[in-house]
Image (cartoon, rainbow over all chains, first blue to last red; front, side):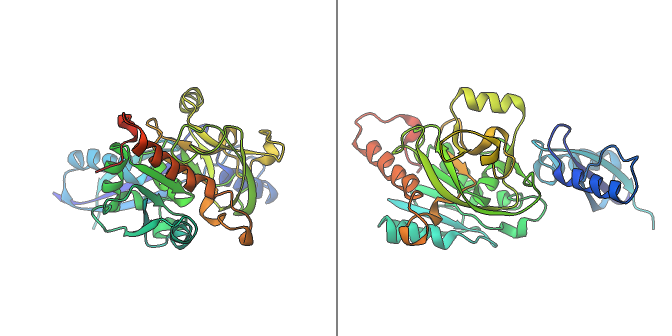
Length: 86
Length: 245
């Protein structure tokens, strides 16, 4: 058993308007990065969990996402849980 | 009639809601704190505008976890009246009491303006005294007021006539230019399946006095009074409109 780190990536759902992403894309184009075809601006949330096993922690972090960290109407999320390196 | 006005840390418009209820309607306003476990027997609950919990994570996301929200859910389940204004609308969507979500305005700009909304249905407690098609002039002030939902949800709302308000031009037409924030189908407000929970981005509580820009907002508050009056007068009451315990 070791302390765990959960990394949660929250992104706008496909098809949901992301005006912020569009604005960032425009700015990147203005800076000369014309290869940028699309930008999605999301959130990164890092959780430190008390000692536990990855297999047990994962569904709980997913539940946290469903109940609070992400809004399923407008956002998708991805979860990575790993043992914390000292 | 007793109106509960919930105050979350960061609520702004609770005072105007209380003022509208007490000084304009002559009703009783009961201030409720976000940590209160119950609603003290009010007939209607107002979730006011503002920036509850600093809009952390998403607008309304923290507020949906507040202790008082369990009581608001129970009140809504029992058919009690709930009105969410601006941040209150965002909270009701986050809490799953209303469909859809409110995201950043399409323009990315905060909008502060007076808009025209069309009442789409009089079959809610807060539009009971309005004619469908009636136009109201109400202020808006929000950065995250773009209402979105998946196609199926929008189709369901249209079919069940649960779109309560729509942004329109002065002629009452639904046109893109009248849409201040990019909301799907110009939707400014919706109601729950039981119709007792209503949320909208515009601010009726700021429009209750001619001296300060008009009194069209009173139509919503007076509608609720009339709705409850009808309720008390009717010998047989529909279960969905019985006030909560």
